[in-house]
Amino acid sequence: MPVNEPQTDRAATGMARNSQMRAAGQATTQGALGSDLVRVQGLKMHFPITDGIIFQREVGQVRAVDGVDFTVRKGETLGLVGESGCGKSTTGRAILQLYKPTAGHVFFGDTDLTTLRGEELRKQRRQMQMIFQDPYASLNPRMTVGSIIAEPLQVHGLATGKARTERVQELLRVVGLNAYYVNRYPHEFSGGQRQRIGIARALAVQPSFIVADEPISALDVSIRAQVINLMEDLQSEFDLTYLFIAHDLSVVRHISDRIAVMYLGKVVELADRAELYQNPLHPYTKALLSAVPIPDPIAESKRERSILQGDVPSPINPPSGCRFHTRCPIAIAACSEIDPPFEEKAPGHWAACIRV
Image (cartoon, rainbow, N blue to C red; front, top):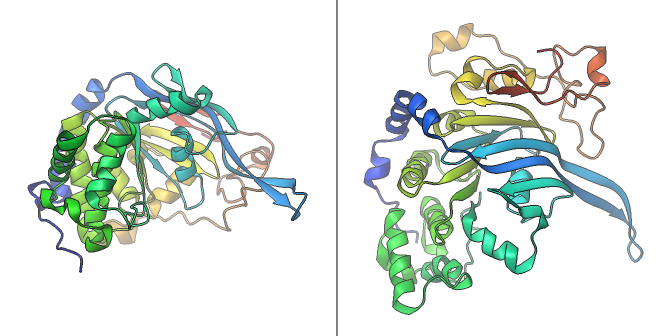
């Protein structure tokens, strides 16, 4: 049976505490953010579609990511949002080179990760880790928790013997679990505890950049606030930089410093959190934000909803011009012909739309 979810001091106050702290110190936080830690330039990730059993030939491509540009500043949390299937998770994995990009560049500091192979890439990955969406599927059920967390230390030769054991126990305490859990197996834990184990594994090699791929979407609502608060506290304690991938816009608003919006393999808008929610420019962003429920029944009943018509086009054969024009409420004839550039419409506010 899973052991009970720990009620740590970090999580006991809920999401409201950190939300107030972030709102009060937003200007200070933005001013304190460092230079660009990660730069993504023209990133593409196309998956081939083949036909034939013996002699396979390529008959098409799934354009999961098709020309993405953005930066992640040192010390910030960049939220990456969009509908399911828009390419968010693929972007995160391509940045870490878990998928080898079809085209484009990913710079970590001054190093172009797309040019690295073998041992050079393995050494660089010590600075970059990932927290996966499914906290059970990402843990080997045949390994103990201690072995799971210790594996990165062994791979990178960072600790042996007693020092490794002590490091694993320390990591368990850092994420709010008891140190004596080292000999237990993943199936003995609840979903929230498994995600804490995944976070501890990511922290083992002391990375500076973490891609969090929908880290709370598989968790109960009552546990999500605890995990979010834990991640924020760890960011402050260990000077971490996050790329936080999610589809829950309320959570992204709470944790992010800046937010990038993706649609069908492209980033269509990027801005500071407050600017994006108060003054969205792209019609797709407006539609997403209008779907977020407001906890005030009167305000909820009075606001205008932007309901998109039709389905998301196939990434195998995306529309010409602006990919959003088939569902856009303000589209004109030129939108089907012009691929809008991703440009700065206002200081720090980028969008890809010829109508704004």
